[in-house]
Length: 474
Image 1 (cartoon, rainbow, N blue to C red):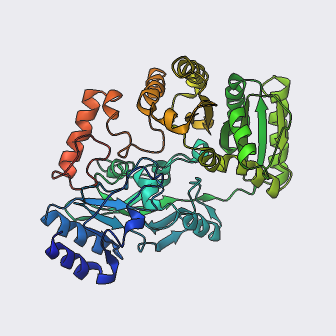
Image 2 (image 1 turned 60 degrees about the horizontal axis):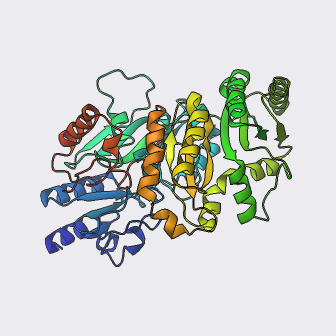
């Protein structure tokens, strides 16, 4: 370790805010325990100017910089490499709310803000910030923007990119770009904002953002739906879009296998549709800006038409907030249920909604042909074509034997998603987990354009090397 760099970092942010690898061990392993790194130092700057000063010091010594938020990512994108050459930049002290503008419906916050805190600040201003995902109690806004997070409300409000108007970014050279504009129209050149969002800290370090706010719904109605087939679920989604319009907030898919797993791992949890044999279920949520009565009337009318058109096998409409929370508990507990049952192969894919039925049928059959008996836990955001297509070991086998085939099985899944016009990563990013397989699905032209952008903004490859693009060691 460079003693000079260590002393410089201490001088820049304060000695107590600089840690060695032993002191920073909690930040060096990714959420799933797959990657473990080492660092020269872990640094906790207090503001954007300190971030820029740290980056300048690292650039002067050609030291890589890895930025980390809440460390909730699933692709190892915020974990430094094991060579111990990098400085880990932690933005946990940068958690200030800079401005709330209810006339412009914007909220400006720093990158270290916990997502749940951002949601609460919006509520206190009688507004809605709709980004919502399972890790919202610990993930940070900077990480959400770095991966262009999705979540359960993308159907209505879009991904993190669509929810962001402006950014503040520290470049690889340690310059500060102040793009915190609360403008919905700004046609003055290249859209730098969208370039940094989703770049996983490889092009610049997002330190703050100006976010869109929305009116808080006056009422929300939730239902758990049962379907005789996946095709019926897709048809009902189309019907719901037409009937509810912009009020359709969420349409979350769960297979019968997922529901059975939830009931096995959470026996004290809700047990809807007990004894039914439907293979697919969905959580549907309607947000209404008029009234509770208007919301329920619309809800019952649209679902009534669905029954008449044979688009629905059964429906349970939440009669209270507690019942709605119980329904959502099913979706939110899926990750923990899988964890309790043992590791499985997780795939965050997206395909056009019109191809969902064919993708699932083709991929299920393909995997059974090559790996007989594997169990399919398919769930996710049907409303935007994003499926978490997860595969567990066959009964009688072991997790270890199953995971030994990870590369081969996952390639079959990714090839199938690609063949159906889809993507191998819908909302989790590339990180280091998928960096070596990206070239299989991106054209040479597209990869070359990405590399040229990286070279232009970070010519010495110091920002999060080894992530997103292969061959990325500094």
